[in-house]
Length: 297
Ligand SMILES: [Zn+2]
Image 1 (tube, rainbow, N blue to C red):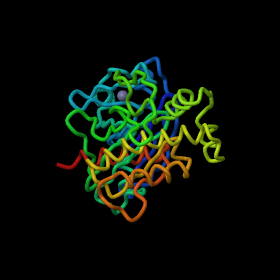
Image 2: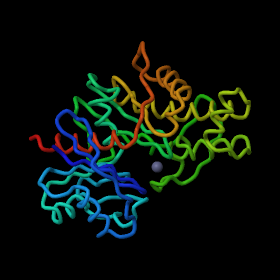
Image 3: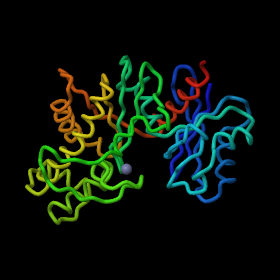
Image 4: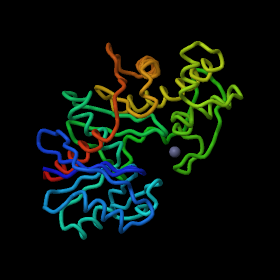
Protein backbone atom coordinates (compact mmCIF):
# COMPACT_ATOMS: atom_id res chain seq x y z
CA UNK A 1 0.00 0.00 0.00
CA UNK A 2 1.18 3.50 -0.92
CA UNK A 3 -0.23 6.84 0.18
CA UNK A 4 -0.28 8.76 -3.10
CA UNK A 5 -0.58 12.50 -3.65
CA UNK A 6 -1.46 14.61 -6.66
CA UNK A 7 -0.29 18.17 -5.94
CA UNK A 8 -1.11 21.20 -8.04
CA UNK A 9 -1.12 24.92 -7.41
CA UNK A 10 -4.65 24.91 -5.99
CA UNK A 11 -5.20 21.56 -4.27
CA UNK A 12 -3.53 18.52 -2.73
CA UNK A 13 -5.39 15.23 -3.34
CA UNK A 14 -4.45 12.07 -1.45
CA UNK A 15 -5.40 8.43 -2.00
CA UNK A 16 -4.50 4.94 -0.92
CA UNK A 17 -3.21 2.85 -3.81
CA UNK A 18 -2.69 -0.88 -3.43
CA UNK A 19 -1.29 -3.58 -5.69
CA UNK A 20 -4.51 -3.51 -7.78
CA UNK A 21 -3.61 0.13 -8.71
CA UNK A 22 -7.05 1.41 -7.76
CA UNK A 23 -6.84 4.86 -6.13
CA UNK A 24 -9.16 5.23 -3.12
CA UNK A 25 -9.26 8.92 -2.23
CA UNK A 26 -8.65 9.74 1.43
CA UNK A 27 -8.87 13.54 1.34
CA UNK A 28 -8.06 16.88 -0.23
CA UNK A 29 -6.71 20.18 1.09
CA UNK A 30 -6.02 23.52 -0.56
CA UNK A 31 -2.31 23.87 -1.44
CA UNK A 32 -0.44 26.27 0.89
CA UNK A 33 1.68 27.93 -1.79
CA UNK A 34 3.52 30.54 0.30
CA UNK A 35 4.35 28.65 3.54
CA UNK A 36 6.61 25.60 3.17
CA UNK A 37 6.00 24.44 6.76
CA UNK A 38 2.24 24.52 6.18
CA UNK A 39 2.71 22.79 2.81
CA UNK A 40 4.62 19.87 4.41
CA UNK A 41 2.17 19.79 7.32
CA UNK A 42 -0.79 19.47 4.92
CA UNK A 43 0.86 16.43 3.29
CA UNK A 44 1.56 14.92 6.71
CA UNK A 45 -2.02 15.52 7.84
CA UNK A 46 -3.49 13.80 4.77
CA UNK A 47 -1.02 10.91 5.05
CA UNK A 48 -2.04 10.32 8.65
CA UNK A 49 -0.18 8.09 11.10
CA UNK A 50 1.41 4.90 9.84
CA UNK A 51 4.49 3.90 7.92
CA UNK A 52 3.23 3.28 4.37
CA UNK A 53 5.55 4.90 1.83
CA UNK A 54 4.44 8.15 0.19
CA UNK A 55 4.42 8.88 -3.54
CA UNK A 56 3.87 12.41 -4.84
CA UNK A 57 3.03 13.66 -8.33
CA UNK A 58 3.66 17.39 -8.58
CA UNK A 59 3.43 20.02 -11.33
CA UNK A 60 7.17 20.64 -11.18
CA UNK A 61 10.52 19.22 -12.25
CA UNK A 62 12.55 17.10 -9.83
CA UNK A 63 16.33 17.13 -10.30
CA UNK A 64 17.31 13.44 -9.97
CA UNK A 65 20.79 14.41 -8.73
CA UNK A 66 19.76 16.30 -5.58
CA UNK A 67 15.96 15.94 -5.44
CA UNK A 68 15.39 19.69 -5.62
CA UNK A 69 12.15 20.89 -7.16
CA UNK A 70 11.55 23.55 -9.76
CA UNK A 71 7.88 24.40 -9.31
CA UNK A 72 6.58 27.75 -10.53
CA UNK A 73 3.04 27.62 -9.14
CA UNK A 74 4.00 26.56 -5.58
CA UNK A 75 6.66 29.17 -4.76
CA UNK A 76 7.30 27.92 -1.19
CA UNK A 77 8.44 24.51 -2.51
CA UNK A 78 10.59 25.90 -5.34
CA UNK A 79 14.23 24.85 -4.89
CA UNK A 80 13.40 22.54 -1.96
CA UNK A 81 14.44 18.88 -1.68
CA UNK A 82 10.85 17.91 -0.91
CA UNK A 83 11.28 14.13 -0.62
CA UNK A 84 14.21 14.44 1.82
CA UNK A 85 12.42 17.11 3.86
CA UNK A 86 9.25 15.00 4.15
CA UNK A 87 11.23 11.84 5.01
CA UNK A 88 12.94 13.71 7.87
CA UNK A 89 9.63 15.10 9.07
CA UNK A 90 7.35 12.07 8.64
CA UNK A 91 9.87 9.23 9.17
CA UNK A 92 8.69 7.27 6.15
CA UNK A 93 9.88 6.71 2.59
CA UNK A 94 8.88 9.49 0.16
CA UNK A 95 9.28 9.67 -3.62
CA UNK A 96 8.42 12.80 -5.65
CA UNK A 97 7.76 12.74 -9.38
CA UNK A 98 6.95 15.28 -12.10
CA UNK A 99 3.27 15.07 -13.07
CA UNK A 100 3.93 14.31 -16.76
CA UNK A 101 6.10 11.37 -15.69
CA UNK A 102 3.40 10.16 -13.30
CA UNK A 103 0.86 10.44 -16.13
CA UNK A 104 3.13 8.36 -18.39
CA UNK A 105 3.60 5.63 -15.77
CA UNK A 106 -0.15 5.45 -15.18
CA UNK A 107 -0.95 5.38 -18.91
CA UNK A 108 1.56 2.57 -19.42
CA UNK A 109 0.16 0.48 -16.54
CA UNK A 110 -3.58 1.06 -16.60
CA UNK A 111 -4.32 3.40 -19.52
CA UNK A 112 -3.95 3.30 -23.30
CA UNK A 113 -0.41 1.94 -22.98
CA UNK A 114 -1.47 -1.20 -21.12
CA UNK A 115 0.00 -4.22 -22.88
CA UNK A 116 2.50 -2.12 -24.87
CA UNK A 117 6.26 -2.22 -24.27
CA UNK A 118 7.16 1.33 -25.40
CA UNK A 119 4.81 4.13 -24.31
CA UNK A 120 5.58 7.77 -24.99
CA UNK A 121 2.98 9.85 -23.16
CA UNK A 122 2.63 13.47 -24.24
CA UNK A 123 0.89 16.43 -22.65
CA UNK A 124 -0.51 19.22 -24.82
CA UNK A 125 -2.13 21.64 -22.43
CA UNK A 126 -1.11 25.05 -21.14
CA UNK A 127 2.36 23.87 -22.09
CA UNK A 128 3.98 20.80 -23.63
CA UNK A 129 5.34 17.83 -21.68
CA UNK A 130 6.08 14.18 -22.08
CA UNK A 131 7.75 11.10 -20.66
CA UNK A 132 8.82 7.68 -21.89
CA UNK A 133 8.04 4.34 -20.24
CA UNK A 134 9.84 1.24 -21.51
CA UNK A 135 8.76 -2.21 -20.30
CA UNK A 136 6.90 -0.61 -17.41
CA UNK A 137 9.88 1.44 -16.19
CA UNK A 138 10.10 5.18 -16.46
CA UNK A 139 13.12 6.38 -18.44
CA UNK A 140 14.50 9.23 -16.32
CA UNK A 141 17.67 10.00 -18.27
CA UNK A 142 20.73 11.69 -16.85
CA UNK A 143 19.07 14.93 -15.73
CA UNK A 144 15.43 13.88 -15.51
CA UNK A 145 14.47 15.58 -18.77
CA UNK A 146 14.00 12.48 -20.97
CA UNK A 147 10.82 12.83 -23.04
CA UNK A 148 10.60 16.64 -22.82
CA UNK A 149 9.83 17.11 -26.49
CA UNK A 150 8.59 20.69 -26.06
CA UNK A 151 11.97 22.33 -25.56
CA UNK A 152 13.66 22.08 -28.92
CA UNK A 153 13.35 24.74 -31.62
CA UNK A 154 9.95 25.08 -33.31
CA UNK A 155 10.07 24.66 -37.09
CA UNK A 156 7.38 25.03 -39.77
CA UNK A 157 9.05 23.10 -42.57
CA UNK A 158 5.90 22.04 -44.44
CA UNK A 159 4.03 25.35 -44.43
CA UNK A 160 7.09 27.61 -44.43
CA UNK A 161 5.27 30.28 -42.40
CA UNK A 162 7.26 32.63 -40.18
CA UNK A 163 6.81 31.82 -36.50
CA UNK A 164 6.72 34.23 -33.57
CA UNK A 165 9.97 33.81 -31.61
CA UNK A 166 9.47 34.37 -27.89
CA UNK A 167 11.50 33.24 -24.91
CA UNK A 168 10.23 29.99 -23.41
CA UNK A 169 9.75 29.36 -19.70
CA UNK A 170 12.93 27.24 -19.87
CA UNK A 171 14.88 30.33 -20.94
CA UNK A 172 15.50 29.39 -24.57
CA UNK A 173 14.05 31.31 -27.54
CA UNK A 174 11.47 29.77 -29.87
CA UNK A 175 10.80 26.39 -28.21
CA UNK A 176 8.00 24.12 -29.51
CA UNK A 177 6.33 24.80 -26.13
CA UNK A 178 5.87 28.49 -27.10
CA UNK A 179 3.73 27.46 -30.10
CA UNK A 180 2.31 24.07 -29.16
CA UNK A 181 0.56 24.81 -25.86
CA UNK A 182 -2.79 26.58 -25.54
CA UNK A 183 -1.10 29.97 -25.06
CA UNK A 184 1.16 29.15 -27.99
CA UNK A 185 -1.79 28.44 -30.29
CA UNK A 186 -3.27 31.81 -29.31
CA UNK A 187 0.09 33.52 -29.92
CA UNK A 188 0.45 31.87 -33.32
CA UNK A 189 -3.09 32.88 -34.33
CA UNK A 190 -2.42 36.51 -33.40
CA UNK A 191 0.92 36.43 -35.23
CA UNK A 192 -0.53 34.99 -38.44
CA UNK A 193 -3.96 36.65 -38.54
CA UNK A 194 -3.79 39.62 -36.18
CA UNK A 195 -6.83 38.20 -34.37
CA UNK A 196 -7.07 37.73 -30.61
CA UNK A 197 -9.00 34.62 -29.57
CA UNK A 198 -8.68 31.93 -26.91
CA UNK A 199 -7.73 28.39 -27.89
CA UNK A 200 -11.26 26.89 -27.68
CA UNK A 201 -12.54 29.67 -29.99
CA UNK A 202 -9.66 29.14 -32.44
CA UNK A 203 -10.33 25.38 -32.52
CA UNK A 204 -14.08 25.94 -33.01
CA UNK A 205 -13.37 28.34 -35.89
CA UNK A 206 -10.96 25.78 -37.42
CA UNK A 207 -13.60 23.06 -37.24
CA UNK A 208 -16.11 25.46 -38.81
CA UNK A 209 -13.71 26.06 -41.72
CA UNK A 210 -13.04 29.74 -40.95
CA UNK A 211 -10.06 30.64 -43.22
CA UNK A 212 -7.85 32.47 -40.68
CA UNK A 213 -8.20 29.63 -38.16
CA UNK A 214 -7.60 27.03 -40.87
CA UNK A 215 -4.34 28.79 -41.76
CA UNK A 216 -3.30 28.99 -38.10
CA UNK A 217 -4.05 25.32 -37.47
CA UNK A 218 -2.19 24.29 -40.59
CA UNK A 219 0.94 26.01 -39.21
CA UNK A 220 0.25 24.69 -35.68
CA UNK A 221 -0.05 21.11 -36.94
CA UNK A 222 3.15 21.57 -38.94
CA UNK A 223 5.11 22.66 -35.83
CA UNK A 224 3.61 20.25 -33.29
CA UNK A 225 3.48 17.19 -35.53
CA UNK A 226 7.03 17.80 -36.74
CA UNK A 227 8.34 17.94 -33.17
CA UNK A 228 6.30 14.92 -32.15
CA UNK A 229 7.49 12.97 -35.21
CA UNK A 230 11.07 13.74 -34.12
CA UNK A 231 10.34 12.22 -30.72
CA UNK A 232 8.64 9.24 -32.37
CA UNK A 233 11.67 8.65 -34.58
CA UNK A 234 14.01 8.70 -31.58
CA UNK A 235 11.88 6.52 -29.27
CA UNK A 236 9.81 4.45 -31.74
CA UNK A 237 6.89 3.99 -29.32
CA UNK A 238 4.02 1.53 -29.71
CA UNK A 239 1.55 4.21 -28.68
CA UNK A 240 1.50 7.92 -27.80
CA UNK A 241 -1.31 8.69 -25.33
CA UNK A 242 -1.89 12.45 -25.37
CA UNK A 243 -3.41 14.27 -22.39
CA UNK A 244 -3.82 17.92 -21.42
CA UNK A 245 -6.41 20.55 -22.22
CA UNK A 246 -5.99 20.56 -26.01
CA UNK A 247 -6.29 16.75 -26.09
CA UNK A 248 -9.95 17.20 -25.16
CA UNK A 249 -10.48 18.09 -28.82
CA UNK A 250 -10.46 14.70 -30.58
CA UNK A 251 -10.37 16.28 -34.07
CA UNK A 252 -7.14 18.09 -33.16
CA UNK A 253 -5.46 14.90 -31.91
CA UNK A 254 -6.68 12.98 -34.99
CA UNK A 255 -5.12 15.68 -37.21
CA UNK A 256 -1.86 15.52 -35.21
CA UNK A 257 -1.88 11.72 -35.48
CA UNK A 258 -2.33 11.78 -39.26
CA UNK A 259 0.55 14.21 -39.73
CA UNK A 260 2.87 12.49 -37.21
CA UNK A 261 2.34 9.12 -38.91
CA UNK A 262 2.94 10.69 -42.33
CA UNK A 263 6.20 12.25 -41.10
CA UNK A 264 7.57 9.43 -38.89
CA UNK A 265 9.98 6.95 -40.46
CA UNK A 266 8.26 3.77 -39.27
CA UNK A 267 5.03 2.80 -41.02
CA UNK A 268 2.03 2.30 -38.76
CA UNK A 269 -1.33 0.96 -39.81
CA UNK A 270 -3.36 2.23 -36.88
CA UNK A 271 -3.55 5.37 -34.74
CA UNK A 272 -0.37 6.18 -32.83
CA UNK A 273 -1.36 9.45 -31.10
CA UNK A 274 -4.54 8.85 -29.12
CA UNK A 275 -6.31 11.32 -26.79
CA UNK A 276 -6.76 10.40 -23.15
CA UNK A 277 -7.60 12.00 -19.80
CA UNK A 278 -5.00 13.42 -17.44
CA UNK A 279 -6.36 14.45 -14.06
CA UNK A 280 -5.73 13.52 -10.43
CA UNK A 281 -6.45 9.79 -10.83
CA UNK A 282 -3.51 9.38 -13.25
CA UNK A 283 -1.24 11.43 -11.00
CA UNK A 284 -2.14 9.33 -7.97
CA UNK A 285 -1.63 6.00 -9.72
CA UNK A 286 1.62 7.19 -11.34
CA UNK A 287 2.99 8.47 -8.04
CA UNK A 288 2.21 5.12 -6.41
CA UNK A 289 3.81 3.20 -9.28
CA UNK A 290 6.97 5.30 -8.90
CA UNK A 291 7.21 4.27 -5.23
CA UNK A 292 6.67 0.63 -6.20
CA UNK A 293 9.25 0.68 -9.02
CA UNK A 294 11.88 2.44 -6.94
CA UNK A 295 11.41 -0.15 -4.17
CA UNK A 296 12.70 -2.81 -6.57
CA UNK A 297 16.45 -3.43 -6.96
ZN1 LIG B 1 11.67 25.68 -23.67
